[in-house]
View 1: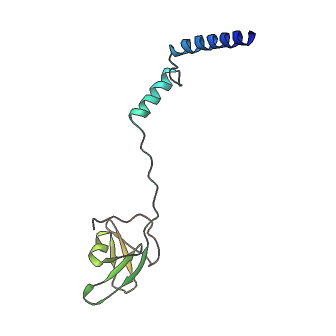
View 2: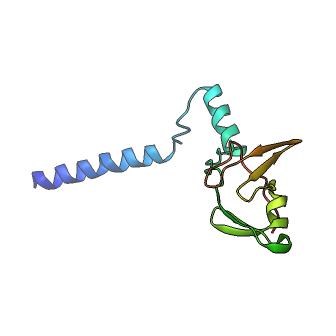
Length: 124
């Protein structure tokens, strides 16, 4: 009989604790006004994540043909002369000369090497 009283008393205490806890809100984890304001600002206006830098493109090769039907391989993708020109690549007069246009300057770029700055992207 004593066991029943202990169980009933424990159940009553547990009921009272649960009923009392339900009336209170836990609130926020960050208690200072500055911390709350900072978290609210981050939630409303998240900071942009930095984009991962991709490796610079590489000129893999050049095939020179008659009538200016040249092909330049940029990162393994063949480009005709016009598409290469849109990306700042100029084929020099020598068969092995590839030039990279940077503003008014032309920088000689050996085939198989990456430029020091990223190439402009075209819409093709």
